[in-house]
Length: 307
Image (cartoon, rainbow, N blue to C red; front, side, top):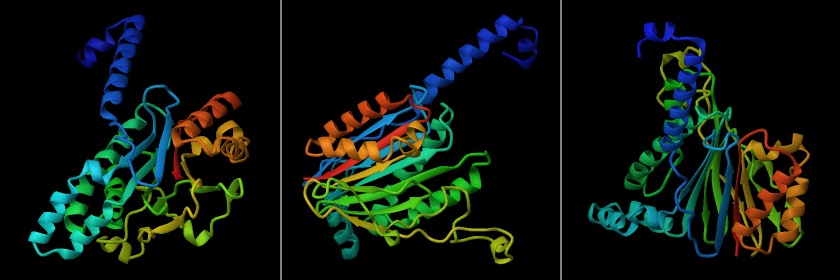
């Protein structure tokens, strides 16, 4: 239908047309936004998650699970690396067998259109991960520097996204980077509460695409006319005892109920059901937050429990 055809339509007909186009777009957005992938299976670690789009179909929150053992052919990659004389790459690939990755992102806004930006991140990350594994034997901060640079260069809209990517090992060590994302929290089974984490282990950077990455910038930065971000720092948190819980989340959870729900009510819930499996803990958290107050934003969270 041409613009001229649209201008000759009656107001009711235009409303029907726009409603039809919106429904079509929502269907497309629901298809374009990929799934999170299978929850990783890792010895000594129990993982589950909940994602609640405010609009009910697709929103700005997104989770990606990386089960290195199931998603990638690690034995085949190790064989290729050894054949090419890349023993360091083969060694790093071997270490990937004992850890799993989680990416949690939050696009500003919670409309269906924001899901498309999350889908852009999804594809960029997963494609880049293949090259990272083949070249370095692991996912490095270089991938996220490139993603940040591409989002800065190509997204000319008033949007930003926060992101956290981390890898949990079978020993309970969580190594992660943060781009303006809410900080992880650790619930101690021994103490029955959230424990303090040193600020030195919670270093974060601006949201993705807000500033260009340092590497490969033009003379604009050299002339001091463009602010840029520093390279990402990798943080480390240890789950020291069986039953300890690492909580990752978007600000839809931390700001739920006007900020009165988090973290005190979550802490109470974890104290009550923390001995249950991760999926049961997630179910109880979801029930409690929905009973506490209606959602006003997309809400996502990941529970990682040492067992």
